Length: 198
Image 1: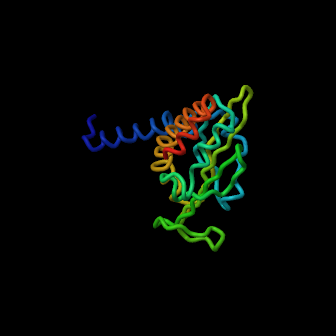
Image 2: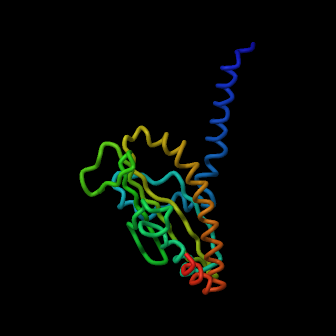
Image 3: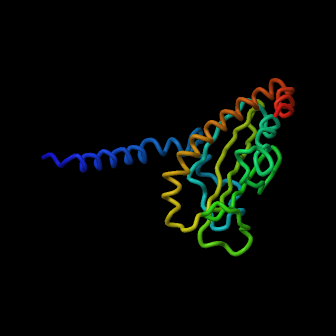
């Protein structure tokens, strides 16, 4: 029995959504991360009251010590790299942990999370954890915490907008940090030259 083009289109779209949710999304939100890295506690929970662990945890192994990775991370945040101007440094443990916080109302204006919370807002921590590995290597794990009001919108905004855009940006960022840090470990002058030319 033929049901018509509209029903066929709806069935096709539902199939695409199902395939994305069951097959593609699980790989995107844990790009490079191990089961242990996803399940174990991640630093920074206390910085986002009422926040939940981010649905994404991504990681990469870098063939360089934390000291060669760290300079490439601390460039992010307000008054640093242009892409990250809304993010403020919220936690800093040199060569171990960098937490960047963004607190915005839903019109894109910053607010002070220490004051009474707004009805509609997003408050999040984007965090980078460096774990020293044997052989002068580093495991860089990126995750965080997120509070979003109204709560009912969080899964919609997260799955439809943030997860795909985070994967695109974060995977590229991690591979770029890996490339730069490994080059810095081989040639320390590379870092100096890169910073002075920026």
